[in-house]
Structures are given as structure tokens and as C-alpha cells.
Length: 241
Image 1: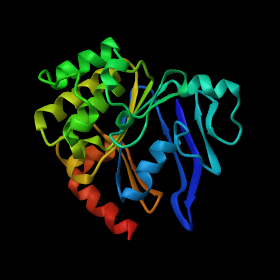
Image 2: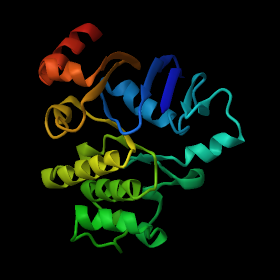
Image 3: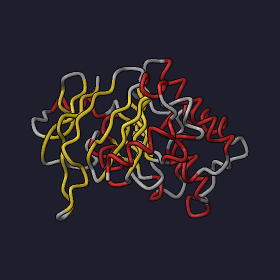
């Protein structure tokens, strides 16, 4: 189980993470939406890509971010796969791989799972393309293929959906996340409300709604069944004002 315990982070004088606490069980798919400030930073803080001054993140009772980290923590960080078009892909042995800094990125990494994912998402994709010639959707597809190809326990997806306008590709991405979920892995994904009410509706039944770095509402699957998602989001917006 993943435990986020009272984590906080200041950027200059602004709290980008404001005393956030929640847990993620094995095999859960959870979305984070609402104000952009908060969700992205929480996602980066979980695997230690963003240092936090207060609180901690635990994975199976081992602190992986925050105060109290030990040498054992490094072994556990490899259980995260952080998927972003602009950030860092985090994988086994805490190796940081920045997609945009590699010209022939796919020649440097030939994971069978990543290759299979890329073929499934975009069969026409030219693996020898340089990143300088890739468009926004190409980068998003490549980042997702590499990230989903990691042998990870937790897949942290940082709003790559905004860079993939092709609905059929998005559905394939969601199907791959569902497959990982069936294998006992967990998914925590930042997304906007439009995506959550659209393609993500049938996949993300638990929703963390953020406002100015704080967790306003943690909607359970039952809550989502009792009320239409659009109505829930409108209620959260009123509460967050």
C-alpha cells in the first residue's frame, strides 16, 4: 500500500502542496483533478522527484520520500514509473531518463514491453526518429510506451492526455492501464475535468479533487455511483471557492 502522509511543499511563498494525505491500495486506479497547482506536484513528490519539507510518503511501511529515508528507500523507488512528456521517467534502480534530452532515445532502451506498447499505440511510429522531429503527440505516445513498459508497481501518469488528441490512442492507453490494474498494479493519474468526464469516466472511479495544493475531496467509488460525475465536480468547485 502507498501512504501519503501530511506532505507539504512551498514554492517561494506559495503552498503548492498543502498538508495532503491519502492512501492507494493495490490494484486501484485513481485520478487527481481540479486546480493544476497540487496534483502535478504531489505526483512528483511521491517518487522523490520533488523534495518535500514536511510529511512523508511510505510504500509498504518504507519511507520513500520525506524525512526518515534510509538506504532501503532507494530499492523501493524503483517500483514507481513516472510518466510525463515534460518531466522525468523514473524506473528501476532510481535511474532517471529524460526523454527530451535523448536524440535516439529508442535505440538506448529496447524493453520488449515498451516496444510492444509502442506498436500497439502507434504501429506506424518510426522508432529511429530523433526527438527533435517528434510532435507533441509523438512525444506523449513515446513517453507512455516507455513508462508503461517498466516493470513497476505504481504508474504515475502526469496529464499526458492533453498532448494526445487521437481518441483511439487514448483508449489504448487506458486499456493498458486497466491491464496493469488487473495484474495488481496501481495507477495515479493527473487529468483535467474534461478528460475525467469523457474518456476517463469508466476507468477512474476514485477521484482526488485538488485546490491550491490542498486535497478538497476524496470521492469513493460509491460516491461516483450515487451522483453524476459532472454534478460532483460542480459541488467540489463550490466547496473549493
